[in-house]
Image (tube, rainbow, N blue to C red; front, side, top):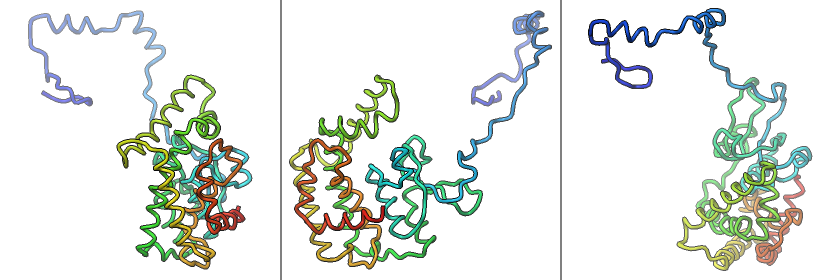
Length: 299
């Protein structure tokens, strides 16, 4: 027995049963009229297609792929997605130039945005996912992120990654008014014009938010999420104090970008919020609002 390319077992030879091999050959033989057609137009096996070339073969700069619209990309405006805005802001803070490219998760090699196509080395097409952007940036401009080694950085980062992010997910996706006015407009409608597909995509986004929130709690309590966000804002305000930047850095770093990614979008009237309890909670801390306003000038 031998194996074909699909892993199926096939016999090495058919049993000898008189004229049975001839009947089998006759059964699988090509009729003469069909054979004449294929003799004139023989089957050809073409080589495999090459991977598509970059859509910008003459690009001269770094390109950061984020959630944004065409006008926002053209003007370098902050992304409306916190994860994208975090890295967009960080690269600006450390002095790396780049162009924005409107994109979505389906276009990302890792399945999530943002990712960056570097200008150098010339000819490279290997994208840099968000998880490696900081390392790449440090190597590019030799900036220092000493707070990464600080235990406090990890503790306060958890406030952003858990309490504030959870409140954001509920705020954007599970509040009906905000979902219709903001999330649907930014994430659903630009993806397709088909009303059925839009309905399915909207449902998937909301279910994904529910699933994420249920990882940390057996049920979703909006008031509890808002209370946790309020505590997180208070802790961040205490951490910042009267300093210009977090951890009393002379220039804004990754943590500043991480905070700005949420505070800016919460305070941005252009987002079109219908219900904005998070803005009410954040506005109680003037130093966080001023921190956001100062960093916004980078854009």
